[in-house]
Length: 564
Image 1 (cartoon, rainbow, N blue to C red):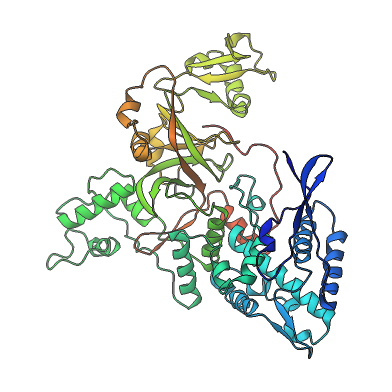
Image 2: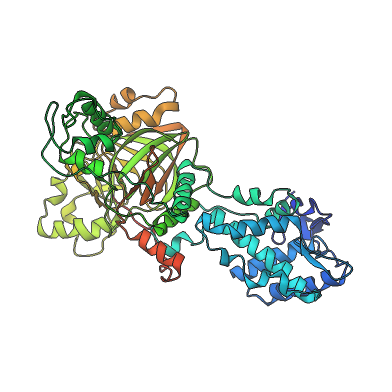
């Protein structure tokens, strides 16, 4: 039999603890089983006032608005428990006090700055118990205000203070939901409500290290950043250079007993290890590319606002990233395969240009495509291919492309490229295909994926924002090898055996979570903070929104980007 939810479902959790009445009961409406919200009558004058106050807020709000939703949740929640207060007690002599649970939550509010929050957002004048006296009307207001403040803190801890889409339409994170009613019950009946609120924070190692860095800044310490190695000539084994002691310090090597300025074997080995971790050629030579990689993130001063903004973006991610997952960090131009907070593999990537930014979102890698077609997005057809065809009719053929109409190939010369003709274009598999030999798919509304590329030279650049939105991987087969760690029966050798001119699809048996993120500050294994360029301006915008100096970005109903 079908069930029908008549209104906001608070579930049986509302009946748990504190003597709450059942919030719902089963009823039958025209032969259909349904659940009806039961509002228990108030049992005291204070409860009666609370019902009136909550009812006014609920019925006075405009349906469909956040205010309406919030007021409805509180009305149904308190209605399930005879509108009796959770957070304040009122003695027969008129004495009003906070419950022990409320006192612990107030302690959390006072310590909100350690989370990157503002204590005054929660410790508002509305929850000042000293201003209440024995006025039952004021006590009712205090109770509901405390629930509102608690839910606001919980929302901020779990979801963030700023809606991601207010920063940019190019941010489309996984939607997390917070069961407000169940949370209130859990908080009010817990001996440690402060720990319940703490559990809403991200548990990822990097978030916790950013929080620790924030604490150091708030205590007057400087955030630790890597030591910059001065520029100079290329260094090879046995050469002497005054920068060697600084390089040793940067790589955390002890000073040698003699010849302090010699680029010796232990330093070469340390440079090779760094080069390997940075996706560089591990030759042990300190050249311009390696020096740039060493110094990346060392020149910019990392402010408290930067750390808070990056903590906020951690709150936008799923609460559980997955024990084994892929993380693309756009400002860092890197993709990593991560297991249990440790990086198994990392390599360079090319991301979207500022005009066609790579979006931020979470998904799961489900398919690997070998010898992929590149199905050219409509925006690229109109903005790039059509103008090329008007000036050079042989352009389609020169790019190993096909024009299709209703899914069938047609002669590109039959198309009026000056008009908006509904044709599609695809590039055939081959050495020059824009997607290279392999792509990694996680179906999404933005037509974005990870893929190989024939344009290898771009990986040598320190800033690598050149694509139409997709993520190009420098070492795709090494990435595939790391990705397939838990994929039985599939290997890089098997994928390479499929290389050719025919597109081949491989479906993964175990989907791998992938998170495309935007962290301008990251914590290295040694605890130092590395900063990265704000290539899309997201960090600056978010700081402005957190400080109340920026307005939210305009909403967008169209896919964010699509391309290669």
